[in-house]
Length: 138
Image (cartoon, rainbow, N blue to C red):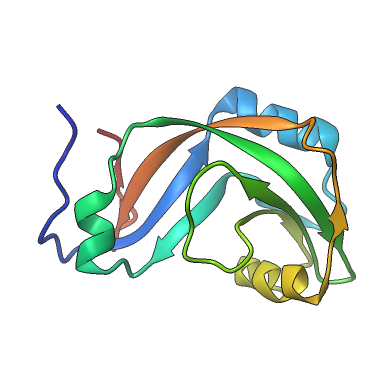
């Protein structure tokens, strides 16, 4: 039975964690171009609302379709579809420069991206992450 997150105050983030196969597929299709390789998750919500916690089901397998790509001197990210996200541009940060935080990918995507055909599909699992960085998988 899935964990009920209703009323939890220790949840910092909800995300889709890429499986090892999903991460390998992402890195094969989009090799990192910056020093810091991230390539591990798509954020669903940062500091989720009570409604987001109530509707989120940890441990659900998800397929994310890569529909866009952006890269500049600070960051590299892919736009994805397949699971709802509070972000205007749901994405996975592939890599960032040494002095850039992964959250920069939001600005990168907003500035524009190359549309892709959706042929790259990444497997993931929904995860809740606590303020202590503990993952709730089911």
